[in-house]
Length: 275
Image: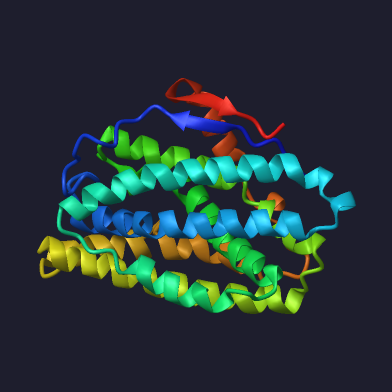
């Protein structure tokens, strides 16, 4: 079902420098979230291009139900791209090196000129990852405990909008006749690449930060990833749900993001709607 996707301007200052260990003074949590941010500007541009191309590939008579949501999706992702570019500029000033983006560029360049459904399948798979990360982040305080309030605001707002538009690329893929075999095959590839890239970039961030050798860094890393309520055990079930034959993103979460957006309406302004 197509939904209305408002475009919001987050009221946050990302030009004033933030601390190196902005996430509660914890090097691992800071490095992990920084790694994720490094993937966003290029990734979200790819998502925008894929969804726009998918809409244009639909026969004109079938586009109307999708046009408003695609417009909102593009507006939301463009805003995420802009803010994470500001965020990443701060990381560059701190001496961190973005290796995730060049790897993604080389990998996704192989899709140039290929069927747009492959682009949409990659986008739908990646959007599932961001949506389940969003649900995890919105469900508990620990991942951002003690964080710089600006950064906590950015991440929770971003998580809420990722949850809100979780179905857009998936619906377009289905409307264009994308099959289940390729949906599942590409999801497995995207999953492998996402996990490997996130871990590699996190370790690289810690190395540049000079905290990779501290035992406390890896105690925190184990707790964040594998401890009680950790990322891996909490995300495995939602990740695996994508492999079900009757999977649809709209049936797997989303309320937490809507609740956050409702309860924090004073933290952003509406700049446009899909309609």
